Structure formats: C-alpha cells, structure tokens
Image 1 (cartoon, rainbow, N blue to C red):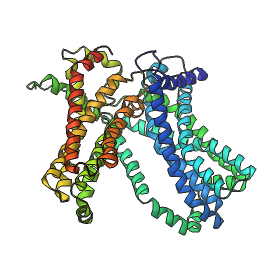
Image 2: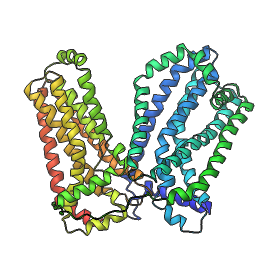
Image 3: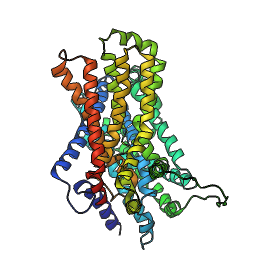
Image 4: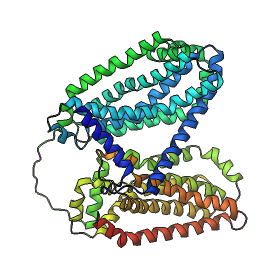
Length: 529
C-alpha cells in the first residue's frame, strides 16, 4: 500500500510538470522548455551565491585549523534553508491536503499516508540541501581538497541531514496544524510566523558581509561555542577528518529522532486532519439586507478567499509588502538619498525610482493563480447569472485593490522625499500604477491560458504554477526591455522624461488590449474551462 501511495505522489508531481492541467493533453515543448530554463536559472543563481560565500570562508578557516567548523557552518546553513523552505509546505502537504479525507475514508493506515507525503517532502529537502552543500564542497575541494574517506563521509552526511531537518519541519508543521485547527482565523498565525522568518532572512542578507567578517575574525570563539551543538560538530568532523565514528554519531542524531517523530505524527495524524475549528452557534438577528452590485459581490468573494489563505497573502502580495517597507525606508533615509539624487542628470532620479517601483509591482502575482484557485468549485462560479467578463474583472480588481494602494503610497513618498520636476513627479505616480494594472490583467490572461486544477493543495498553485511564473517574469521582461533599449540605442537620441511617457503610452495600450481580450476571447476561453 505504501508503494502505491508513493507512486501516486510521484505521478502527481510528474504530471504537473509534463502535461497541461486542463486534461490529459501533454504540455507543449515550448512551455516545458521555458519552465526548465527558469528552474535552471534560479538554481544557478542560488548556487553561485552560496559558492561565493563559502569560497570566502574556506581559506581563512583552514588556516586557523577549523576545517570541521567550515562544514558545520555548511550544515547549519543547509538546515536553515531546508527548514524555512519546507515548513509551510509541510503544513499544507501533510495536514491540509485536499485528498486527506478521501484517503482516510479508504482502508489505508494513516502512517502509510503520512509516510508517502513525508517522502515527497524529503525530496524537496534534498533539492534545497544541494543548493548549499554542493557549492560548499566544491569551494573546499578547489582550495584545500578531500581525502577519499572525507568524500564518502560527505555523501553519507548529505543523505542523513534532511532526516534531521524533517524532524523539526514535520513537528513544527504538526503543532501549527493543531493550533490552526482550533482557530477560526488560521491566517493570522501563518502570516506572523512567515513574517518572522522573512525578517530574519532579510536581516542576515543585509548584514552578510559584516557577519562573514566577524565570523572569520572570531572563528575560534564561535567554533568553541558551536562545538556544543553535537550534530553540527559531528557533521563537520566526519567530513573534515573522514571520521566514521563521528559519522555514526551524526547518523544516530538523524535517524533516531526521525523515527520517533514519525511514530508520534502517525498517532496524531488522524486527529489533526479531521478536527474542525469550533465556532459559536449563530444567533439570528433581524436586520436590513444589504444590496450590492454583481461586481461588488464578486470582489467581496475574492477578498474573502484571499484573506483566508495566509500562503496566498504572503506569496502573491509579497511585492506590496516590500513596497510599503521601501516607502518607509525612503522617508527615514531621505537626508542620505537627497544629495545622491541631486547629483543625477535631469530625469534620471525619476527613472530609477520608476524602475524600482515597477519591479516591486511585478513581484505581485495576486491575479495569476486566481482562476486556478477556484478548483473543483469553478462550475459554481460559471453557473452564476453574471457575464464571464464580470467574473474575470473581479479577479483583476482583487489584484488592484491589494496592490495599487501601496504603489500609490510609495510613489507619493518618492515625490515628497526626493527633488524632481513636475513631469518627473507625474511619471513616478503614473507609470508604476500602469504597471500594477498591467500585472493584474496579465495575471488573469496567463491563468486563462495555463490553468491548474489538479493540485493537492492551494500552495502548489500559488507558488509553482506556470501562470504565476509567466506573469511575474513577463512583467519583469516588459520592465527590462525598455531599459536595455534606451541604454543601448536611444541614449542621447531622446530625453529621459519623454522616453518615460512614451513607455507609459505603450503600457497603457497593452492594458487596453488585454482588457478588450478579457471581454471577448478571454470570456470564451473561460466558458470552455
């Protein structure tokens, strides 16, 4: 039975990559190639970033005789990336999957269902671990080198480390699911935890140079403190010295806790997945019925769906969160930025601000998964006595209601904080707003073309669907193309401000074309979904 469940999980993942989500039709070669290129590009960027960090650390730590400490840092970095990258996916995959109740209704032991899901999470952790450990090992091999025993220990340790990560990931996801199942509004706890992880990530990223310098300068003291963390110490000693005794100790630290966590979760799996949040009994109170238009009612429905899903909020509207943060930072550091802006030629300050704001707008993909998220209830939406255009525009309006206000606030902060002429100030307000409208329309258009309805949980649609990736990278391409064109061919031919307004006109025309498409061809495609 376990093999059958695992086969189903693997088939689902392969099917999502190899075929269209609308049926048994295989994904086009161009679509598959585009997704493959995207994954390769992202992987190479992450590998290069990690490689640069470990290349800086390898030589100094080796000269200090702290070889084991280097690999311990690699292990802790991989642990942190795997934990942050999979903890919320674990909560959705293990305890909030759409087919949990269907599987539990069959004569299948919960431990088999849980085990098959944990194997898929383990594969995700292996992929995330590879992003850190591969460049760390390559950087060490290029500068110092390995013994045969060290290579064998490195391979075995890399296979064992995700088991230790899974202990914390699954246990944390279980606690999160147990708490969420007792709350009526589970979005709040998910958002708070996600924002804490996000703040920690940005703190480390912004202070990376200082942290590396401090680590090299105080390596002996930090290593002495870290030696108390036995799994990290054993991991480092096993690889640095080819010490198989330490490797056995590290294996025990990984396998034994994993077995205990699996046993505990197997016993509590049924209770957590079948529990429903308690709610007070509704008491009827006579009151006037509020009447609204069809478009307003559809928008309220979209807003309720958006507000009820923490992963939707944090992944799809991440650009809006950054936009608000950027606006606050601009006001705080106004005195520092004003001299820099004054040194730029006329129009360039406005251009740089527009590029930054448009980039943040393009990061919002609220509308891109909105049709796919209807899932099995799509027929209910299509049965409503409203036009397909009204339904599609409600998803566009959802994007605008969430993303446009932060964009306008940030634009206003830019105009207030930095000196610029009236034409530049108007462009700073106009063009990011047009980019926001463009992203909202493009998201719905791409989701019509690449819907995904065969998902186990909504997180898979929000984070991994083709429409989300195409919408985001499409907006970035639309932003990058005019910049490259101006730098390469038009610099000195046309003024910066005039060029900005020409780009605004083209962007407005593209928005008008997509709006017209949603009323005609897009509506017909929606009816055929």
